[in-house]
Length: 236
View: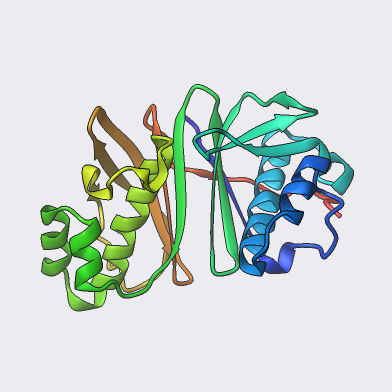
């Protein structure tokens, strides 16, 4: 199965909101906290450009306003075009001024997550990781532990999104089997496989670490390495 992805940053965002639909504008205006507003805008901007590229459609603001991202009852994002459901599955994540959107066919289970690599406390590991995952981090070289813990956490987040539950489900009910043979202390644009086990099966996925960020994608059926989308020319 093919999975596509796109990344955008705060620097890509326009100051205006004319690329939002009327209902999205209402949603934005109802948000009280600046950080929440900024993260939401960047996530929507990224998802709309990813959808435009996936559909081979125009990326100018009038066209983006026709692409609407709504929250399902579960909280998962769902894509609409001219008020009709789009035949795609999407997942959005944002962190520290960056956002990513993953896209697959509508019959897929899909989740993605973007995390900034940073140290995780022993208490964090005990609260959110299985005993086997805690032992895996403890055995890793000291230089690799922050990135490995971030990888495990990100993969769990992606798995919870694919299950469409989010953090309402205990993260320890998922267990991650990562391929982290490359030294995690460095960066690489290469995708590496991972597996996220859950109560009714497993999600196959991929991870990459670059510029201090770790990005994971999981899906069912098992996905091929994610394909980067290109932002349509003339998006402004």
